[in-house]
Amino acid sequence: MGIFTALIIFSFLIFFHELGHFIAARFFGVRVEVFSIGFGKRFITKQIGDTEWSLSVIPLGGYIRMKGQDDSDPKFISYDHDSYNSKSPWQRIIISLAGPLANFLLAFLLYLSISQIGMPKLLSTVADLNQSHPAYEAGMRIGDKITNINGRPIVYWEEIGDRIQKSQLPLQITVLRKNKYLDFSITPKLLETKNRFGEIEKRSIIGISPDFNDTTTVQYELNHGIDYAYEQTKTASMLIVKGLQKLISGLIPMDNLSGVVGIVDTTSKVSNMGIVALLAFTALISVNLGVINLLPIPALDGGHIMFNLYEMITNKAPNEEIMFKLTIMGWSVLLSLMLLGLYNDINRLIG
Image (cartoon, rainbow, N blue to C red; front, side, top):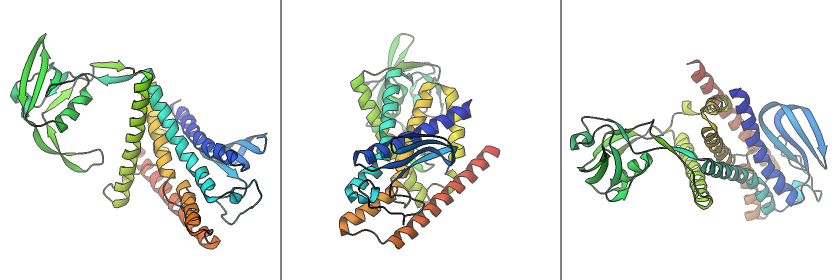
């Protein structure tokens, strides 16, 4: 059931991406000949207007085929009034941008939904202390509820780390213990830790851990939910961009690259963790699709944008032969990355 859910979600994300292209193309009068969810042989097809809407055998992906535009053959050109190539470069750029922007919009809507459903958040109760670290040495104990750091109220655990990193030393921490408020002056240790990318960085640590059983559900009003959804979408986008930069520069090993199998496997596991976790992970994958498709690789949306920007700047179309060779190179890069991701996925699954 989990794998089925994962395939449905993945197909929905692709559908939303391609729907963005479809709406922009139709807005500019481009005929969309095929809208397919999945690749390979089409086993269900419905003609609606000028478009064949299809489900294909391989459910991992999808595409639209516009008149006069075919990634598998960049030399396939039509200059009819309803073809992709008859449109101006800026119109073609908007058509290419529409897919990734649809993914960012979907992520925003998913995060907005989470804000209205309600998110589980850890409260500020201490469940464990490292006895060689400053919090224990200052007198904090298991069960203390942190209520204030340097004069600023604390409710959720996530606020504690943020305050510790941003506050001036030493910290003035107030806790609630057995209905009594106690004040502590604590100077954090500066230790080397690994961040989410596996890099070593220095962080201020006081040596406390949360109580994972002490949680609450937080719902936002619509205006605050919109702010939350925007910030989460922006944060997820920046996280993925930084991850790609570090992957390309070699700071993150290539064996961390995951493929479709890994994504489906993770989605399957997350689907068993509740609707909020599933929506959050789906939003992250949607942002991922948006960012990846904006990379300036021929055969991706970013590649199309790059070619059309060239035409806008030089006022002449790219050389067809060069464009064809670059597109083949782009497909080769994508195929290599897909195979590497698949290899890593298989290694992780059997390892």
